[in-house]
Length: 209
Picture 1 (cartoon, rainbow, N blue to C red):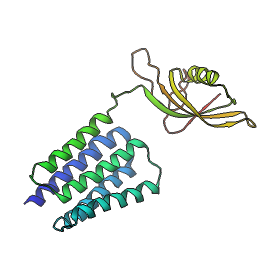
Picture 2 (picture 1 turned 120 degrees about the vertical axis):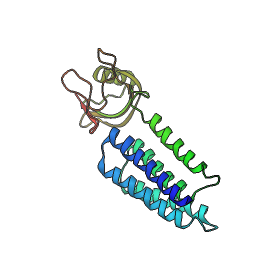
Picture 3 (picture 1 turned 30 degrees about the vertical axis):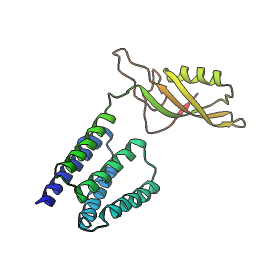
Picture 4 (picture 1 turned 180 degrees about the vertical axis):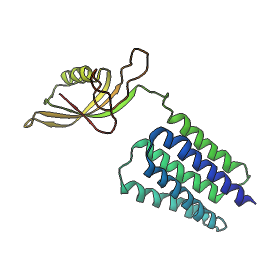
């Protein structure tokens, strides 16, 4: 009976995490399939080992091995890493189970609640992190901040130059900034440089004149 409750709880949790949160906010089908598969796989293995005295150690070892394999296979955004670990944790918690019976569902609900709030679009909506390529080699920090502020139109919090190409006259820089707001008070989306002619697109780093 307990295993049926845990199966139902895990399915409800992973479907809510994948379809209710991740797909609605980020729209990557391949990672949605990955989250479902890894969750169910971890749940099945953890449930089969739940009667073993070494189940906790094996479960944690499985968690670590799968994390290394998945994170080395492709580059993930930080929010995607958070969803991935959440899917792993949900499968592991529900598969191993705990006593009292309400503890595992409570921990799963906690994970879902944290992901709902932490990844909500209204949480720090103006803060951005972006890779920018300037078509001028700018070595002076004050000039760099001024140029980035002019192009991005927001408040620059930090700018780290990753490459200063004096031969080709280019500057590669990682920028953390607060995006400007449109007249209605909403933050302009992140991505390409914020200009009047071209909206932002988060898929590519900005190339700025």
